[in-house]
Length: 161
Image (cartoon, rainbow, N blue to C red; front, side, top):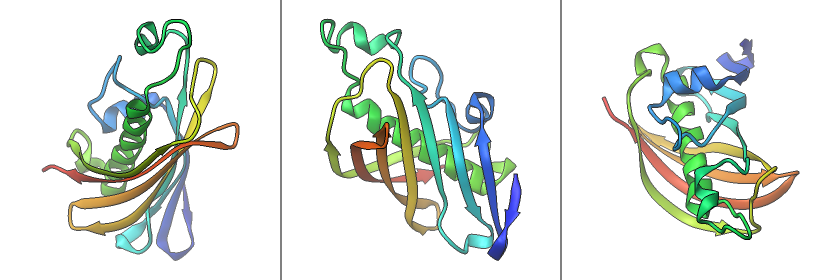
């Protein structure tokens, strides 16, 4: 972790243990493995952002039925990975007192799925805050594989006390 200009904190990466301390999701529904390039402005000045990483393997339980002869990660789970990255980011931005609080997914807008995601892909989920009002955040999410956009969405979330 390093302090940056304008009172911001930059964290290079966090591992699965820190993600699991931040959000309640567990296997088989935990959709991110690591987070990188976490930007947390202090005192509400600036926008929070991060990159979530999901290593997609053939062992994912959804591949057994989606689709057995042509495995494709369901688009709703890509959006869920965006939401989990954002939820972890919200908890990190609120500090240790927020750990264990639940961040609820509220809305999805403008979801677009460009190309399939399958076994062997590494999904890199770029999340950036668009707006915050009290305990409600609005985010833009973009999911990439090998630098190519695979999915994108605008969504909102709320942290529960």
